[in-house]
Length: 329
Image (cartoon, rainbow, N blue to C red; front, side):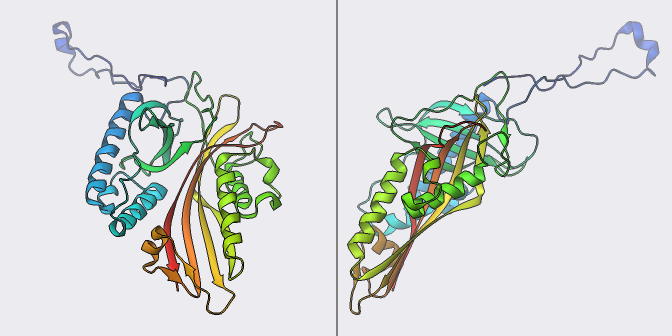
């Protein structure tokens, strides 16, 4: 990350030779002109922010108290952590929450003039774990940065280059901005692919990825397992206000998006019952469904979007998902 002096002040001195010139105006401090874009945070600030987030997470995890997280955790990250606390209240044998702190590998701090703003941190929780990418957002100039989303990098993926002589550009998710399509469209189209699989008109726009393969495989297996007694519907939709994008060195973009997912079961054979696995039973408050069941999940995904004119597909770089709730009747 480039570091620049943002402001400077003129050195003021009063000379005894000018004692009789008290009415003359003193020179005023002037800001130093900075060439190029200025990143929203610098390295030392990132270290402080990450330390504060880590402390809040430790406090919240110790007491399984989501309210303790709110000063430094928000959005999808807070929802997933809150759901994890709920689950562990019922299933005490479960281990601790996913570790969200560790070795700081790098950060991507785009330039921004206003708010809300964000930066991305790459963190390795443990030596034997793959890195995760974290999105930290700031709602306003007096608000602290909060951990808002995290994704785990997929096997064989590489973080695209964003470092230039200037801070990279933050891209409006609604703006195509020299890309093959807008970040919002990418999120919406990937949600369609996760819903419809190869039947989606956008399936070929994305390279094959392990996240998609796992989700589609699980959905197909689930549909097959219940088909004799239950109907099965799946829907994935993107969150318009939870999409972030930053320019990469090749003119493309690194984008992050949050998706809501639901799986709905409805009895088609009278007397049929759907046993729920322990985690879903804990959320639903009962062990089986005799009429209907619905499972709500949250998915966060990182994409590499090619520049406009490229023949390359959109690549999924990282992903994360977790169950938020389950209902049964």
